[in-house]
Image (cartoon, each protein chain N blue to C red):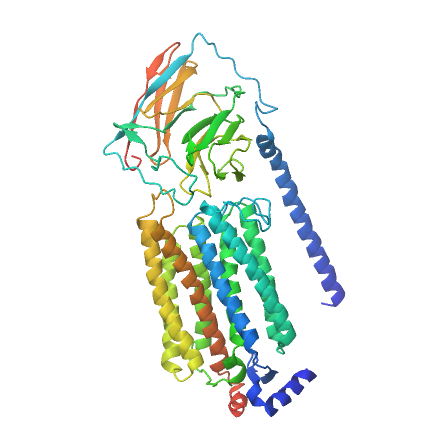
Amino acid sequence: MNKKTSLRMLSVSVLALCALLLTVACSKKEEQPANNMSNTMSSGQPAMAPAATPIDPATVATVNGTVKFDGAAPKAGKIDMSQDPACKGMNEAENVVVANGDLANVFVYVKDGLGSRTFDVPKDAVVLDQSGCKYHPHVLGVMAGQTVEIKNDDQTTHNIHPTPKDNREWNESQPPSSAPLEKNFAREEIMLPVKCNQHPWMKMYINVVKSPFYAVTDKSGMYEIKGLPPGDYTIAFVHEKLGEQDQKVTVGPKDTKTVDQSFKAGGE
Amino acid sequence: MGSGRHDLRRAFRAPSSRCISLDPRGNTLKAIPATYNAAHHAFAVFTACATLVVITAGALVTSNDAGLSVPDWPTSFGYLVKVPHFVGGVRYEWSHRMVAGTLVSLTLAIALWTFLVEKRRWLRWLAVGAFCTVIAQATLGGLTVLFFQPPWLSTAHATVAQTFFCIAVAIALFTGRKWVEEPPRVEFDSRHPSLFTLTLLSIVVLYVQLILGGMFRHHGLSWWPHVLNAATVSFILTWTAIRAISVYSNIDAVRRPAIVMLSLLITQLCLGFAAFLSRVAWGQGAVQPELPMVASTVAHVAVGALLLATTVVLAIQVWRNVPVALAERVPQAQRDASAA
């Protein structure tokens, strides 16, 4: 092979590589608008969102209940906040919060049964507060496209770092007394972890769903989902450590059904 | 070529200040002029030690889950050198960036110094290579921040860090008095596999182990591939060390690193076990990184880096002192053994 041929082959290879890189770059660009849109929108629904399916308010039902923890409740892990003098708060982890057998921080949502219904994205933002070097709430529900307003009430800098599987990852710092961050998530994702890399004990979970039919159990393990149109549904109960459990439920017009659930240690 | 022959003649005229080594194919003996420069060597040693400090600082960042506590790069919270609020993960990440920045300056200095004072051309290029590696390493570090620490990128950052450490240690070795002034005691190795092959194999399995460990630390792999490969590493390194210690005990340059390598291997296995217990067996549900898991893991990373660098030193010394006895070069080499 002479020098000229080698040079020609090298040029062709370089051109082919450039073409390949360009193709990859272009294909990535095509994926971006959805992500960018989700990030830049400060509130409201996606621009191209289809009109919400009407629901007759006179027939809507309610599902409520209590989530229990079977067995001896695990001892809450202690948090050592000494690495930041500005962090003064309750020094207990919130990964399994049990009081009198009632399990808090379980995300409950209608997993299946809504068919092709679409819903308006609420205009009001959901607030995620950083106070006492902890996230409040520890488990948050939000509709896809809905604004999450992130506040820092601490006299220290936090960084907010969601590590999603299906949404776009981001990491931003928020100094004390700074303006709230406004973010949203474009795609449905359950138990999306959020952490602060400055304070490694700070962890919380955001649940992004397409419908407004969700709730998070409070300290007494109770939840309530209102405004559900009559139908057959699968209700999912998801806990960050104990996993997911599902239940089928049928609700008629104006029904109020109680659906209780219990988790065992180890996610059984 | 002509200058090489000229160097050869000069080297034979003044052997005390010249170093002669076999070329990689071992067919000829090539003389390379070199003069021991105490200050240059001391600076090379200092750079190598500083590299270990940076590796330890990096291990502290990962162990404390502080890698993204400073979300921007190359600036830190918008500034290049301004000290941020020094709390939480920022302490580790920012300190790591600062000592790494210092290391880049040290590497630039050693590269320039080597270029100015060093007569061995290959060593000059090695110093340039060191500088390129440290720049690549800094870029990888920045990319891990900008791309939110994907496991493969973070592992590449960890692997290149230890590669740079090996280069820094090699420069320290090549500029040392013993390397420059003492002629090697050449003993040809006719065993199969040769000791040199074993040292290369040791480096390969250590690199595999480093990648598996990095992938585990950065959540890209489970722990068991790293633990399984530890058995392979132990076997190969023990074989290499025993061969070096038992067969070439009369060659200090080979025996010493072999003993150090074996000692570090044992230490590393103990630290790995401690890290496994604190992180995997007992620390799975930990709310935050705890002192035992941080201490054992950081020590495991630092000793791992020392182990790899020692193995590289052993390989270099074996290449120099115990070359493989290829049929075509033994007669020539035996004739020139005294010169080597």
